[in-house]
Length: 491
Image (cartoon, rainbow, N blue to C red; front, side, top):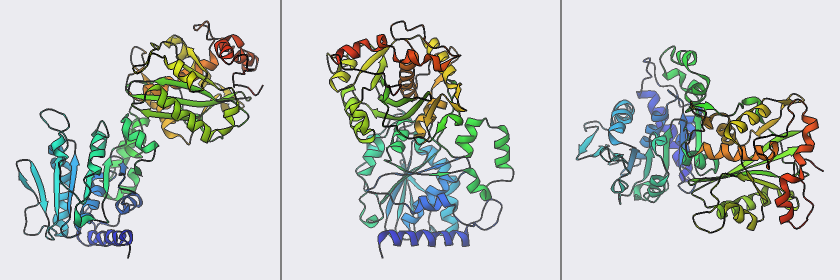
């Protein structure tokens, strides 16, 4: 029997044990795991990469985490650890409300104290010799990560509750090396549970790049374990953005202001890259994230936003090289076409690691950068006007629904505050800015940035303005007279 088969069998046996000994809140016997819970508990991950369970309010996140922990300590002599940002929160919620009632109901600590707490080293001893440690990663005094709490300890499984409280991924990277307790060999896993993350950059990045396997649980899956009327009350009182995040268990954003752009689900479409058209890219070079948004302009006319590349802690040249390789692989026909790249005209110019400007580096890497300088109020008005327009019943600007993080960022995450200024959240702001530069490169006249050569009553008549040669004069001369189109039409 393989380790995976054995583990799945252990999960099934544990579920039957719960059905015999555990009661639901209404006093009825526990029925069964939901589909998402079962898949999450069964998953040990690949190469010890994290497995995440994103749940709505009342979606059974902590319950699922504790059940997975208990399956791990069913292995005699196994040592596992459950973390949260602060230990006091972990003990007062996950331990007290979920783990303790579960483990006492199934009788695995009979005759023992459920919790031993000696100088902050809290642990649960089980009858088969296994141990569950309860630890916080951060100090309540300094509010900072305590490296000593990652320790030199070995564990057979590591679990983290409320992972969205972690502002960066460094604790996860350190913990991956602690999965080596002998009794857990073959069943090692790093599992987390969390509320749908909001602007937690590393979580969004890991989900996007598939560094973390994610299981999502809408509240309906756990309805049988909730008080009567619980869901109905939340549906009545919550705004739409909260319903998506806390009822459906979807990744969402609780806006820190008003959404800058008026995107909605109608703008999320499934469409394919057109090999006959050039690429149009918008770039933003943040100190913590570098972003490139990739699109095309077709003959409908319509702006199609295909993709985005987001790289953490990246300097301009590494980001440019990643984007270049991505485009060669995913958009191979673009290699032979004159693509355009729009960047921030207000950028200071010089990078921290070079005497070259960002544009100089892009040119060296084979791109065609053009700086965009335009007032914030102007770009907001013009882009929203374009977003709200339709061509043959379809929005003029559409986003690729197969890139959900892009759709989320532009429809919910990119916000303005009460003064109309972009909220500096160090994540969504970079995605939104890159999109803005791409759009303004199409809709604006670069030489007179406060005036747009767009007649919003007659889009078809305006197509000539999108191929204005003065707007790309520098790029044209740079390519030594090579015939260059803007890439917005198939001219």
